[in-house]
Image (cartoon, rainbow, N blue to C red):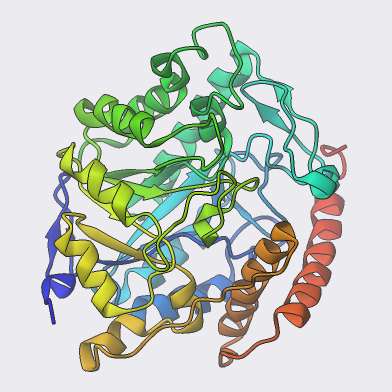
Length: 412
């Protein structure tokens, strides 16, 4: 078996990962009422740190408490209490593990029931068919709002460094705000932020430059980028390669290649343009293509659950292997592979006729495992998709009420 998976890797900024396996970001929805980590996330990240991966990337940490991807999410702003984040970083860094904070703004992908801000490059609403009403109508951002978002990314990154995190990953994929600027489907602007790819990439590049200046060259800085939107006429692999070339001079430590959005959840193996993805390591072909065209280290995620596939990723020229769902069902999968490379991880695949409900059910199965691990309980490998979806929706409704009560004077 290829041993490169368990070899160390030195990042451009100087940090050393003990192996090439990464716990990729998954939104946990386990924050307390003040959008801060507490014992539940401490327990979960302890399990991942002890599980043997070289790097943990957190689930979404929001740069604005009024722009949340979901209830129960974390937010780190200029006035946020730092001690809980310091404790989370300390716990995650056990066992020679690095911890990076994924920082994000959802843009238009804000659930209507949460209230708050629904901003985007243009005022184009999500098209989710009969489920479109779940999301708020977005407002095209003003110049001041764009500058505010750049400043917020910078503040959150700097505070993550102060809390002891080893780096940040800027989320520019999965249809969130920066991806909305990158995609011609959602960016119809005619000013300096729209039109050409160079203009559509301006927000990402300005955020990266500001974060690097604020955090210094010894702090890891990664970008999560779509290999494609998997929607006709959207951001595609040629665009991704060009954007990566724009990032080349900016001291980037890693590009994570993923794909899709709420409208086309390719990160769960589903596309909207009928392209067929691999059954495992969905985006490997795209990532290997990007890796051949850049000096920046590349990571790919998407359904990886076997050591043989992780090894194939490294053999393709991609430097790091991201795993998400498989580490929800078995946080110690990396340790297990060192003992037996034949063990196959669990990645839920719900394929109902309604693709939106299928996507929600897949996420519900994963989040149910998070809640069990956060309570120091055993995972349920054969959990029911329907039951998990019902329980998670009930849980989210409770968290939504809590959020709206906590920020009653600020949300609509």
